[in-house]
Amino acid sequence: KTTNHTYRKQARKFVKLIRTYPLKDSAGLSYAASFVGTTNFSIRKPSYVIIHHTAQNSCDQTLKTFTLPRTQVSAHYVICKDGTVHHMLNDYLRAHHAGVSKWGGAVDINSSSIGIELDNDGFEVFDERQVKSLTLLLERLKKSFNI
Image (cartoon, rainbow, N blue to C red):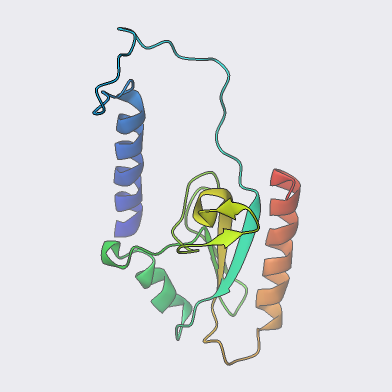
């Protein structure tokens, strides 16, 4: 699929960005001449799961929306009415699913959450197969990330 090619291209851009460290400071601060990389770091771990309905007419329509650069929206998972789960983005990466958001004292929920979209127009009953897939996915995420 062409979006998989675009996904890999985008991932390579991020790898390139990470390799460019240290970044030059535009504020004019004085930094040491060399970069001293710490050994104490890890990938960010999600702390929340945000579940939305798609408000679209089909799973295919949602997948298309989430693969068009101009829409600037995405999710980690899309679950179709028949229970099919589309994993669209690595769980450690930031999707654009929660907009400008906060929960309690946490802000920018996109940076700390996994987004799951349920194929549903917002007026219909959720299909039992979809709910079963959602439950299984939530169990895995809860165990994997201690959410």
